[in-house]
Length: 200
Ligand code: NI
Image (cartoon, rainbow, N blue to C red; front, side, top):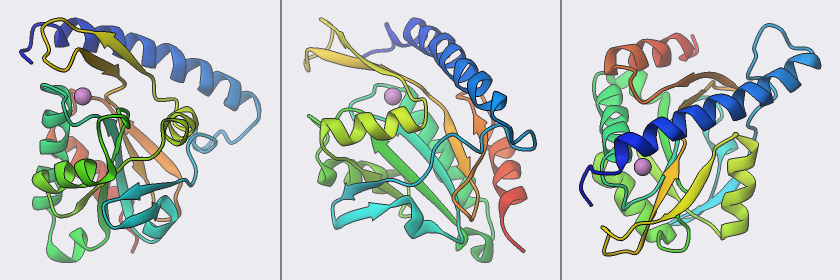
């Protein structure tokens, strides 16, 4: 549970993500929509929170920051969710009402909907944590070109850790992906990008 494996795995992850998203974008760009290269990625999905089913389309009218991770993640997920929380805290009340955070676990076997929701709430009451069956999670990850791999990890009491894409997707009020922010983006950068998408 130390930082010993994360820097390397994060680099591997970023490289894999770049390749996967690059391939995805190349493919999709061939089929038009030059204005928004992300228009054909993503889309609606339904997973489960502690209080029942939640769909991305429930957030129509709001800007959504969508992130995939897992609750036992030693430091990448906590950093990115803390940033998400800071982004929301820095908004005006009126702006914050039009923004939501969504955390989707890629570790559905350990992260129940209750655990995912509790974890997200720990960072901010405006972030919702979701889980589902392994098949459901796999389908959503595929929609968003999110890669995650279970890695045996002797240093962890849990026996395995998960390498995963550390991308924050910015989704506009109509449910369309408009931007992808990386792990190294600052709070200010993310907040600026979010503000740009707030309707009105
Ligand atoms: Ni993580």
